[in-house]
Image (cartoon, rainbow, N blue to C red; front, side):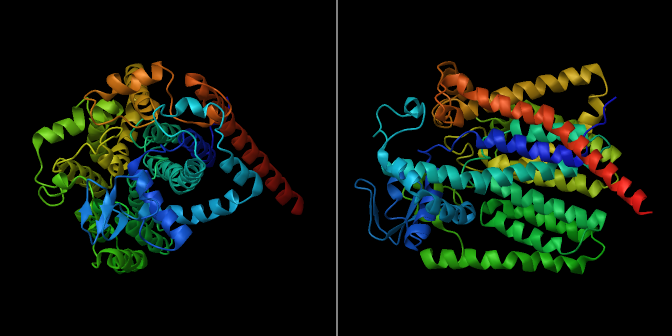
Length: 512
């Protein structure tokens, strides 16, 4: 009987599978949200300014300040700025600097200026567009490069952290590995793991910060980790403002359960530097330290003017659509997440750390109530309810107890298999079907937009396209590489570790 993989082997394998699967597909080049954040990166990296006047033509997600703004002529009497949070732009900026150096190399520069496409890329272009232009190629390559390192790599790391925490709750690392794959590849987290949006980065900061607090409190990890937790929480705040309430719940939980409460000052102090940078950025642009970009957006003012920046009160109809609707419903898109319901009951019954159960439930409840208060809860052209993405790891974690109980019998295996299969198919089809996320005009995006695109061979740009593969055939390299990693790497890593341990033991015996 072969030895099961070690926890380290699982972690390395998981990181590579998630990174390969998310990084294989390139960011959408005509995505307003991603372009708006990228424009800030270009403005700082190329010109050393915070306004995006020279780059703003590729996005409608922008602010005009001090104004006024003329919608008819798309002219601003002040400057254009991104109206988005700056966390993703801050994370991407160092990698853009690296990309600029790489793009300046003669072979790369010549290719960019040649006006040629890559492989079968011409098949993915809008026939009514402007074709391949040097500037578009440069920005597309830059966006792909910096999004991979700023978003896909942290997302894969967070999948590993999710696995490590789930593995601490049960005695089967294989189940924790499976759940981490489910979270990373069969929920909306997959769709946003390689997009220059705020959601997955906010999930990274909030959940990894929570994990570090958990380790300090329950495993006696070094208190220095609290500094990093504070930094990650501040990164979350400057990335996705509404998550601050969830972070407050996590911090209050830590105050309640941690014996040495005074040590938590490190979390507070660790959050200050990034908070000061954020306040200075807002003051330099909008003459106030608080984020008010949406107040000056050139579009959607009819939405932002409702309630408080488009927030009203929780709505039962909206909550139902958030969870069950075919339009953007979370449980329609990823039905495997319904297992969180029995998961919460099991974790309450089996786990000694009941305060963790209360915290997880509180974070989930907050996100659902908050987003059911939004006038534009669906978030535009999206895969599922994107504003719930930072909630997903907290919702998915209790499922580990369901897997631990249900996978011990055949009926449970069948039920889990069906839910995972439906979730993975729905998430992947809506994520890679077409060159843009499902437009908001489709009431059933799966059957009206994404699946027809898949059947017509319209697959999101990927690295298989570069080597000239078309349609579904472009997914073959991904299946081969991810399959090889999943089936071969854990065993190889385990055997390699065993050989090292045997050699070390032999060395010690020889020394004695």
